[in-house]
Amino acid sequence: MTHDEIKSRFTETDPRRLERLWRQANELRRRHVGDEVHLRGLVEISNHCVRRCAYCGISARRTDLKRYRMSRDEVLDCAREARRLGYGTVVLQAGEDPRLTGQWVAELVRSIKDQQGLAVTLSLGERPAEELSLWRSAGADRYLLRFETSNEELYARLHAGEDRGLADRLAVLRELRRLGYEVGSGVMVGIPGQTYDDLARDVRMFEELELDMIGLGPFIPHEATPLAAEPPAPHDQAANTELMARKMIALARIARPASNIPATTAIATINTADGREMALECGANVVMPNLTPPEYRPMYEIYPAKACIAETAEHCSRCIRGRIAAIGRKIGTGHGDSPSYLHRHAKV
Ligand code: SAH
Image (cartoon, rainbow, N blue to C red; front, side):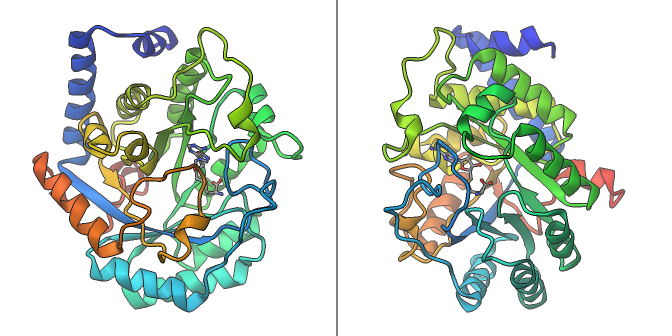
């Protein structure tokens, strides 16, 4: 797809042509990653963060926010729960929290691998190469780090007051690749100041980075963050709607047909009725049910009114299985590695 071909999809309103886009993405999904929907148990292990991201509700700017950090045993209990519920992967996510030390995380990863045999995904922000290497040696399989936007200037605005820019984030993504991680990244759709040209360039970036996983969701303003009070947008401001997020998912599937693409909680948040199903039917093939202990969930409020926040792990599992079955798909078995990764490492 050329830049203009990608861009034209964002302004497309013709129902028949949109239907064709969903069908094309859904067909590529079926052909390259099959009908299985892989479940990853998400554990939000700490909401401490040293970064000042203008969009995020747990940034260091939030001096009023109560902070927590889970203990090793609490995380191991969640991993046990993931296994019991039949999930193939546990995802450990947090703010950028240096007190989650290299050694502590490495031991945690080793214990989860030993005890449960699950695939382990880390999403702990930009960390030094030595730590990423240590965690990889301890058995971590995958790493998630969104680049948020490929527009360098917009990225700088979102991370004002920090000494790290887009180039630093992309360097971490390349380091993760070099270390043999399955690499996941992605963007928010509809960030104030983001245009359709930007989104089209984001899709090209998915290709350039040869991503194995692509996480996409609408930007959801959080009133306690500076971005919620942004001035009026330019006329080609990308919309932070479900439709735009679905277009992005479909285009990501077309750009990287063998990657894993989650139907994210952000999409489920702006369409609680059937946002996940809609995403699964236009290219997505992964769901990440939340396994964070209920007492911590309200404190991991990246954006407001997060879907499923009050649900138990048991309830989430049952609900999501029902939704997957209802659209004629199957629950994934095994770790659910992306074929793009397996091909690169010649495991198939
Ligand atoms: N600290 C880690 C992981 C937690 S944030 C990191 O930054 O990588 C996980 C993702 O949530 C971010 O990458 C961002 O794309 C998304 N996010 C943050 N704030 C959001 C908001 N207000 N609306 C929608 N998505 C948001």
